[in-house]
Length: 125
Image 1 (cartoon, rainbow, N blue to C red):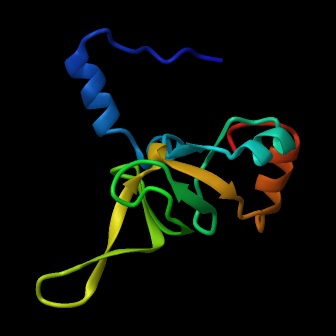
Image 2 (cartoon, rainbow, N blue to C red):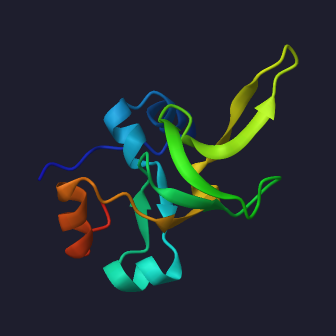
């Protein structure tokens, strides 16, 4: 397997991080699993998917639990069901929560590929 060359220069590392293609950005949207799921699957963290149930661990919405409704790969953030803020002109907008600040409490296992990967104990699922 060919080794990817990475630069030591901070400016180049930042550029690579922020200009990465979407398939690499989506791999960065990971969150730790709850204790029960960690014991069951033998994995510490997973890529968050739409349909997963998460609990917010930090910030104003700490302790709120809800289903992931949308994932923003460019910023690494999630929209969670029930976490909205009002707009000045009326209506509401979802609050974007960073993926590292949530805990996955229930997994969406509709995808057979993801189920197989988790049961095999592979963290890339």
